[in-house]
Image (tube, rainbow, N blue to C red; front, side, top):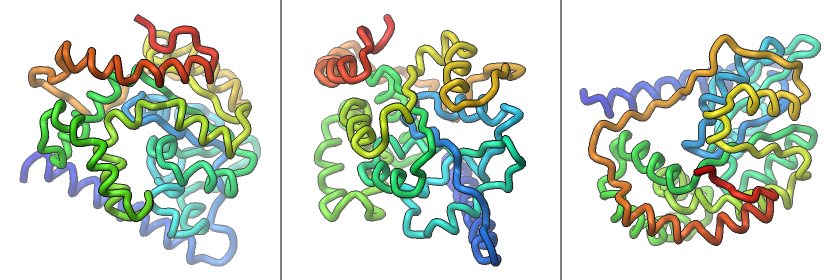
Length: 283
């Protein structure tokens, strides 16, 4: 079995066990578990796994059964009891959360979240969209579902997404394409945040930069804790977590970097105006 196949099997088994346990809790009489107090909503390849681990280390926080439950996106049809079945019973003063990076991008999620979690808070991490797009490509390729070069994948993206979402954004085909092939689309952060702001009060959404999490993890983490109303805390270490390792020659050539920079320029300008960030991406 190849490394890619082994990873796919392991991930499917892990998700299957986690879902089965949630179904079991949902079938019991009474409330199966609480709803989360906050969500890390994205974006993908923006450091959400690292932030997840930093938040999970907090003594007042208890995590769900796994990092990405995808209830408000892929698994919404399973119902609220199934979702609650993933969360632990809490002692007074404890909080619980999950982190699904697809939530920021999927267009159906903000309305669903607003209806189900009217008092929750949300944390979004945003990264230089050029770097994010290439990291996303490497991530998809590592799972064996991207046969194209990076340049060809960018050329094919619009048609791929349009074809997969003709019947709406919630079909299995739409989820596969939106999660795997949205290299450039996910970097249009302003339009995603504006959809969230249309459903959730802006004061309940905290937006931070991945670059700041990397260069000043303690400060970025501290800001996030204050937003969430959690006591100050410093983990033993601020470790970066990623499952993607690429040892090949980079396909993010100067020409592609320039092309993507031009593509994202107007979207970055919208983001600057929306968040009052004079310079969205350092350097």
